[in-house]
Image (cartoon, rainbow, N blue to C red; front, side, top):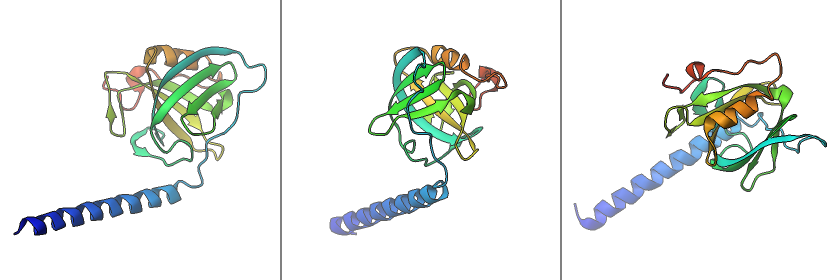
Length: 177
């Protein structure tokens, strides 16, 4: 095979892989089109207990750390500013409107080691389970950069409704405990 033929074969394979990836993402986006994230600000008078900078990793089906959801505003990795208030948790992802998870939408919080294709040190991710406005429970994974995952998890656990119980690290999906 000549050099030119080899280059053409490699280009053709690359184009086919890109097309397959685009088709798969389009199908996933259509599948998840009915799921939304609650966009908005914390209610007036909400008291901020913690702010943290970090990385937003993914949102997945509840207890399925390997099934990414394409929820508008949460579909892609991003830098995130997390604000924990007495009324809930605000997520400010780069280039997206603020997402505010009211306390009554929060289900549980814990730590994890694995989410999709991200593996970190033991319990290095915060796994925040919450209910979408449509009633579906999902997990969002955060990687704090300026404080420990335990500190962020503990701050969020104080906001959980009384009927919820925080998930311990030993019970968290993706944890290697």
